[in-house]
Length: 532
Ligand code: FAD
Ligand code: SIN
Image 1 (cartoon, helix red, strand yellow):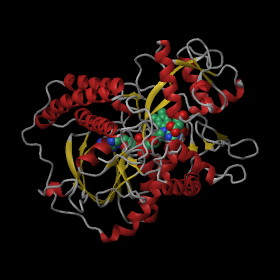
Image 2 (cartoon, rainbow, N blue to C red):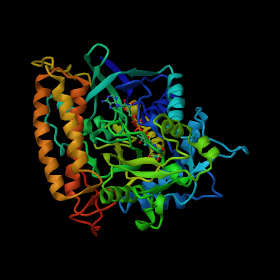
Image 3 (cartoon, helix red, strand yellow):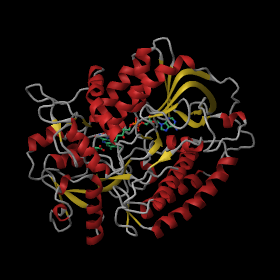
Image 4 (cartoon, rainbow, N blue to C red):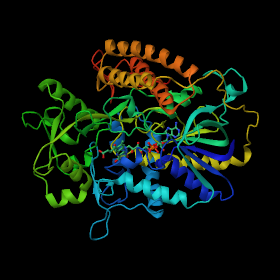
């Protein structure tokens, strides 16, 4: 059993930032980070384009970044949260620069700024095309330098502990549900440990693995959202799954390699099978329209021309600048026989980002006491119906800070709940057939990609729910009788996440932002968040 003042689930930008802040403020308190893979195996590590931030008020303004975010969010952003993130962003980015993160500068020493879809200005700080790798590197190094932070790699968090584990009935309407810590599976010895905490922060990232084609690494299985839902936290806006328009098309390869939107920001053009630039037919902002618009346009071109992909044309771009800004993309394309400066790059949309998640207030507090959420698993109100490109790293920094500020003010008033029982594994046995789990995962990803993708309708959603019901009952049976394994738990969490996406999509009787339902192609007058 472990007891820790601050428990952090996840070692991406959100979890590490929170941990470092608490470690600096409270050298005598303990901070424990649990992560189910290697420390740096996170969505954060794969971020490419950069971090959107207004850091030159002569060339840009807070108001413009606010307006761009609100336009992309299609009516559902919380304007107060947008203002908070945009205005507090520069200070938070400066902090990670102080901790060692480096962003590209020009020969005069000014930050170079990129542009992506939906941005009215060049404001995206980046480290070549591997911004996330650089941020994760700096944060991991900073976290490791603090003696009071313990990072436990390969610990799979199974469930949040609440009054339910003390034998009380806990439902969504139970007032004052409290979080006392988590149960976690130590993947080195397969023991299930009870970890008691005063404050718990869920920073477990995204859900991309619910789809067959995704830019997200294997760790993105919606565990944080599913655990929070099981513990009866409020989950909102799960229908808004963002598909990135330009993932490299390589048949059968998963996850898909991203071709950052910053390439289009620097002038690349989308072309269809016939070689025609098509984006202007869909939107006056052409290749730099917000992501929902571009992904739908590509989807339509692919269906219209019967192809599996469209092309990204970089052949007219300055070769020296291209190789300087996008060395990783250039090398990756080259490795599969494509010279990005001479050949068109085949690209197709891929599931990329979850705009909804665990509902939080403005300090990252969830509907469960002492449980905070930040980063991709949280729904703070910033993104609304469609996240503006490169706003998520910024949101993670701002909300990790806000969670920390609130938790810091409360920590000395909190105590451990000592009555929590050990995990009960009675009656479970080693699962006989791993194939049951891998096959169900494939089915789930197929169902979500075929019926709950970029374009939806009521019949498809209904079919998806029926298929999920079956997968759910089969998997629950397996879960009840088997010794837990990460594969089984991830499958279970993905089914829950998929269920939340489908149910939210069914409740939204309109098309808005990333949710496009051909049975309700217009926007409704009623502005509402779907909360489950
Ligand atoms: P993550 O970085 O995903 O970290 C999640 C952590 O939780 C991991 O450590 C994982 O192991 C852990 N975890 C999960 N489940 C469990 C469990 N059950 N038990 C224990 N640990 C668990 N955003 C931008 O703003 N700009 C960009 O340029 C950009 N580019 C992107 C490019 C790609 C290819 C991808 C995939 C995303 C990109 N994004 C970008 C989005 C952004 O990277 C993510 O939203 C952000 O990094 C999420 O950070 P996080 O800390 O919330 O989660
Ligand atoms: C990209 O670099 O295109 C991804 C940026 C993001 O997801 O915000």
